[in-house]
Amino acid sequence: MTAERIIINTSPLIALSRMGALDLPGKLPFDFSCPREVRAGPAGIRYDPELVRHVLAAGGE
Image (cartoon, rainbow, N blue to C red):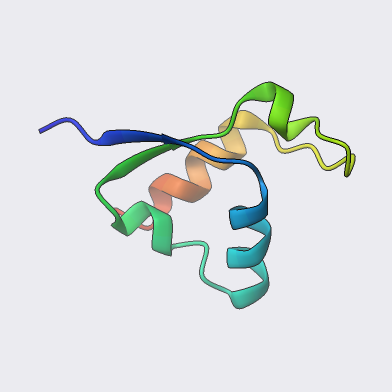
């Protein structure tokens, strides 16, 4: 079964990090994707795409 793909901005990652719940997205049956343009948004916050994938995948393993 292929996971449904959901495009997100970085706000959910920031919120989950503050709650200490970065493992939560990896437990959900979705493939979260944060486009490069969003990662380089006006807040100046940049996430390495590999780090984002690793963090999101960690909860599902």
